[in-house]
Image: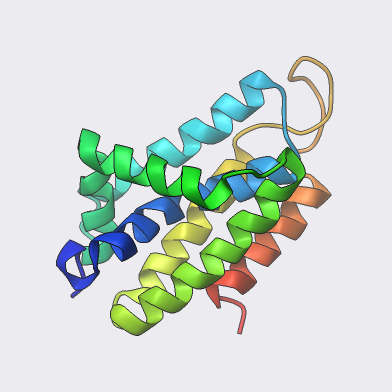
Length: 166
């Protein structure tokens, strides 16, 4: 079973970053109000908390969730995210996030084939959670739709990048 020692330090940062990228791709696809963006970010955080104590989660998911519980792990993820998205305009964040998820999926397939399906499914679950966290459209949080067409399209792209709809 895979964990931090399965990867080089640089690869591990990419694995950690994948959690943020999953939610960020959806958020960038159809940005909500400030409250909506906060709800979408909190959904990612809830998924991390749940994974730490989920006996059904595979070892790689639990290792990543445990790493996020440390300030060093969160800092490493933020640094890697900053490097990945450096110089990006807001419109580029979704595409860059999806491209990075594709690369991370290939890395996990190569280095952790036993844990890859469960880990990639977890990343997809994070993206779905972000998409469903806040209504899109409407006024002051009232009305709108649970998942916008742009978010739905991005969820399909995330699935494809992770190799889940093959």
